Amino acid sequence: MLNKVEHIALAVADLEAAIDHYSKIWGLEVEHRERVEDQGVDEAMLPIGDTYLQLLGPTSPDSTVGKFIERRGEGLHHIAYEVDDLEASLADLKSKGVPLIDEAPRKGGRGHMVAFVHPKGNHGLLVELIQASDH
Ligand code: CO
Image 1 (cartoon, rainbow, N blue to C red):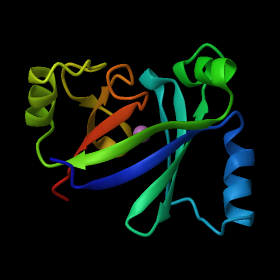
Image 2 (cartoon, rainbow, N blue to C red):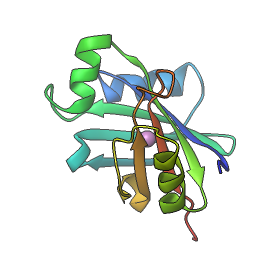
Image 3 (tube, helix red, strand yellow):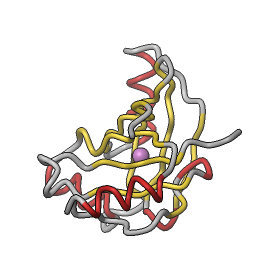
């Protein structure tokens, strides 16, 4: 069901400062930046091999990521797995009783269709499933 780890996402308070850190200290470069308005995030994608580090900054303090940072501080936010058939994966998880945040695929960053799986019932890990793109 899972093809690969598409990205690992960190919630960061200051996106510019985090990009600067990962560039200077770890030698990573930003390949893509985007504001996903309905998720309340500014995201930057930094390739590592065939996966990405995703830095997530809040667009406002009362956005989901803003509240996350206020509650728990900066750190691991979610892991994204690529799947071949997002609808089928969601149906499979649902049939196994795994609580979903998104019952249906929705549009995420970079034009991908995504869905989030609730950390409750998943040993505390927020998972994002990403439909493998054809291009
Ligand atoms: Co993500």
